[in-house]
Amino acid sequence: MTDSDGQTQDLQADAKGTRAGFVALIGSPNAGKSTLMNAMVGTKVSIVTPKVQTTRSRVRGIAMQDDSQIIFIDTPGIFSPKRRLDRAMVQAAWKGAEDGDVVLLMHDCARRQIDDDTRNIINQLAESGRRASLVLNKIDLAAPERLLSRTEELSALYEFERVFMISAETGNGIDDLRVWLADKMPPSPFLFDPDDLSDMPLRLLAAEILREKLFLNLHQELPYQLTVETEKWEEQDDGSASVHLSIYVAREGHRGIILGKQGQTIRRIGTSARIELEEALERRIHLFSHVKVRKDWMDDAARYSVWDLDYDA
Image (tube, rainbow, N blue to C red; front, side, top):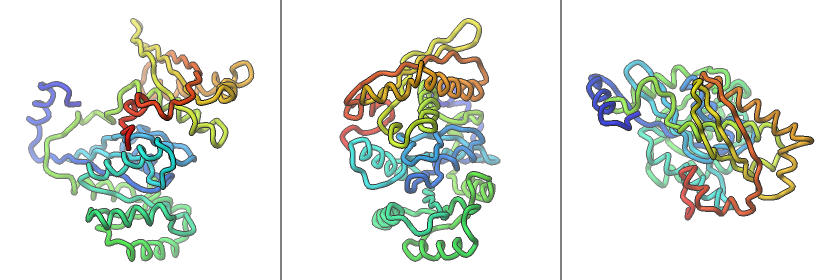
């Protein structure tokens, strides 16, 4: 990180011939943006589930390629917003695009046709005059003839700088994309320590890991009605950490679903989250989770600041 003047000077001192910049990943929900960023970075730094609209804030992952530092901005999926939270997420996605030195539009080419959200994104890119490259993802799930026809369809809507065909899940095509991105980064000293993988605070990382496990294990709609926050992070003398997380739901009935019979559901989910957090941090974690009812949490401005979202979007 560049929090201290001393470390900033060290990064600048080693800046000869280095490059560093930002890559904004945009696309409709579930296009594979988080999976791609995690693959580029080499570890999980963003929530990944089969459900759509799981990334709520802009998450930055840091990848190194030779003398280039590539900082990925994984944005929320861009869709037609209906709620305050939806509007804030979509605004954050477009802000992420503005911050990028390179913009990658990701599209799930396994879809039978181009979705309306992708068409709307392309229209807004064209209106803004922003350059963008196209990344066709999930090529392992699409027939070769579809890849060619989909490329032609999308290229007819917008003049992309480059077109890449990848599978973020299997890693196919990712190396070529990373090399190209490294060359596109502007000359600059490294903006983060080369050993850093993300600028996500540990408290937010813990909350996001638990939220992911809740998404994976709960009913289709319930996860969208909850949020997770780290209330307390305590360092222990033996090198471990005690992490206290609160799961906020909008209804009392939701609380019972998360807890499960005799607390079995939350224990299972909490254990899964703890194991992943321990693996990510390579240290022992004592994880404590509490389910609380907060009826209007989606209209609470304080929640939005935690995710770096604009409450008034």
